[in-house]
Image 1 (cartoon, protein in one colour):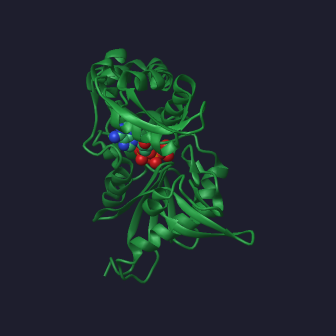
Image 2 (tube, rainbow, N blue to C red):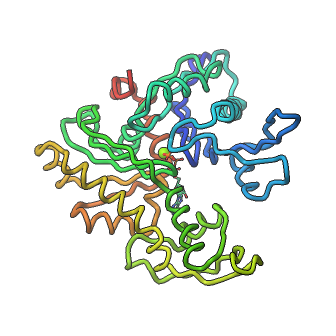
Amino acid sequence: MKRIFGRDLAIDLGTANTLIYEKGVGILLNEPSMVALKEVKGKRTPVAFGAEAKTMLGKTPEGVEVIRPVRTGVIADFEVASLMVRHFISKVRATWWSISKPRVMVGVPCGITEVEKRAIREALDGQAREVRLIDEAMAAAIGCDLPVTEPVGSLVVDIGGGTTDIAIISMKDMIWSTSLRQGGDALDEAILNYMRRRHHVLIGEGTAEQIKKSIGTAHSDYDHESMEVRGRSLIHGTPIALMVSGREVREAMSEVIGSIVLAIRQTLENTPPELAGDIIHRGLSLAGGGALVRGLGKRLSEELQLEVSIPADPLGVVAEGAGKCLDHSDIFEGVWLR
Ligand SMILES: Nc1ncnc2c1ncn2[C@@H]1O[C@H](COP(=O)(O)OP(=O)(O)OP(=O)(O)O)[C@@H](O)[C@H]1O
Ligand SMILES: [Mg+2]
């Protein structure tokens, strides 16, 4: 009966990916946060969402464009974000039969403004019976099974597409948190710029991401791979293919990785001594897609002198954690934002 009268959902509305978790069930949807739109007589109509829209990136005919409505973790294009959320929720709800609308828990980056919070609530207008917001870093920590309800300091670093959230949590509270407006997208951009500067080759965003995922590393121990990259020569204007090495990609990404390391270091410096002791003992949990950059765990571990653990599915922990709050609302009561 409870299921018929409404199901609760947790949503990770990310810069790169949107995930939806259903209470008591698990992750039901995981799609790129993208919408392909066609402009007809000045009006934009969606032609594809999510994974389908991503396949069109950089390849759309005139009049069609692929939009990423979430930037650096917050809604950048309200109209398109609403369409996307609506579409994803209806896709999940199509598999149910229920009378009432779901209650929804949404992850938000730390330091989000009231205006940005309102945009999220309004994007869900009509889709949800009740909207609750939770700090993504808190959700990530819960998703990583860290003891957030106990008087123990836990350090979590969530490197997403648009943001890197760093937080120290103890007793359901964020003791310290900071959000860096740099993540996986900044790494892609750094690779794209490197190719232009060093090789005079123009590559697309998708290619840059592919290079990062295939041979990108943050540590010299993982440098040995290389791959063929195709782009357009800026000198001849013609298509060109060239070999790029892991070492080059590490060099290209080093500045962004350096700022992430620095932000974590600053967080550690701001940690009250008792909690710092816990963190030295328990280490750091790395979440988000950025955790998959090869050698990043080792790099952080060496530079910060901390043990680094990476969950089995770093891309899913925010949705898993927010979902767990729904599953065990008695235990996690109060971790969401008021
Ligand atoms: N195997 C991989 N190696 C390196 N980077 C990866 C890998 N897989 C995914 N990524 C990167 O992770 C990022 C997406 O991560 P994630 O889904 O956690 O972000 P998000 O939650 O959508 O963004 P945000 O939290 O900033 O709003 C992208 O930049 C993507 O390129
Ligand atoms: Mg995220």
